[in-house]
Length: 270
Image (cartoon, rainbow, N blue to C red; front, top):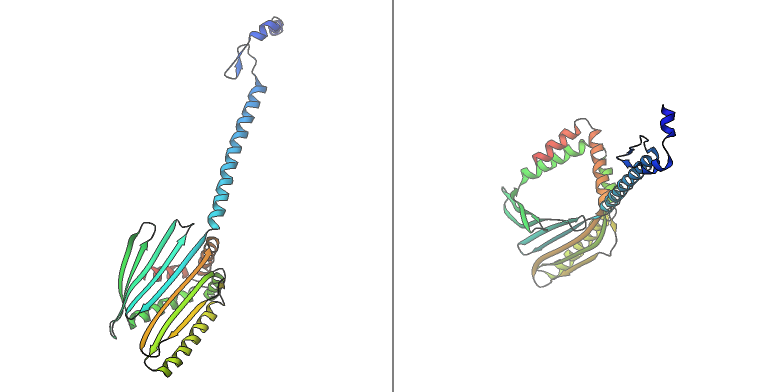
């Protein structure tokens, strides 16, 4: 009977058979057409996923190639002190500022009064404001906390030198005006300040890569008493090296027993 059914299926009748939802009304499944359609759909989806993965990889590389710029400005004129630390990251999308506009010496017992402000420059918004007194006890506690952090990290000095090796300095400006009331003493003090600046920068640039000639000025005032100074330093480091340095630091902390717990306790306490 089956052979007889195939026999009466003439070519004209076969032409009138049409497909619906992947199967013909004549009972013959169009396997070849379905297979080709499925292959085309899967190939298109693979192409979309490949494009998405490529865009994500390129975006991640661009993100890690961005620079984290830090600009430090410090000035003192008479009794007015100001320290500004500006940090820009992610091609300028992140802008933060630490401002210390007031530093007043109160007394020997109470120490130095410091007012600090954390500002979001992108939104021009004050995030946090702190008022602290730095006295002998505060300095002693700071040294104790630093000692605990260093003892619970393997070769912190090596980690610091390796990290600073990726920091680039693009500008260094340091101007000082001074006078002590006597011409001879002013001249001697000017020479000492020159030597102090050269020694400090010589040590710093042993670790940091310098890409610009430092601008150092010492201007003496022989006929009066005066002391003003202005420092501007601009540096940058790639975000990739910041992430690598962070991972290396965590690894060195984990290698010491109770290292992570000690760092968390000290940092959160501060």
